[in-house]
Length: 88
Image: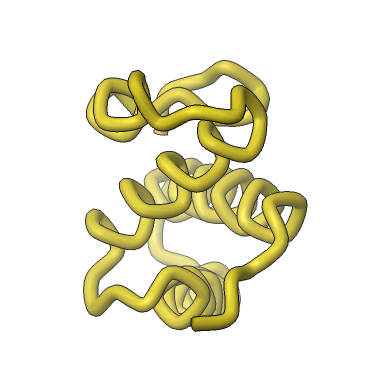
């Protein structure tokens, strides 16, 4: 299976978080379409079918890429830490 580069996953997770914040501010058609694109790309990139699974898989892969092991990957996916250290 081909793996998405960690830099791409990090960008997608950050973009998802940004789009989520913008979408929470109110209905906006361009933001909604962008969000749909990001969700689709994250799902395809992680081999998952829903955004929660995609985010968990992306965060686990990022943790492994950054720290070289997956001992804490489940905790990272659960609490939502990302490259910037914010919850998502």
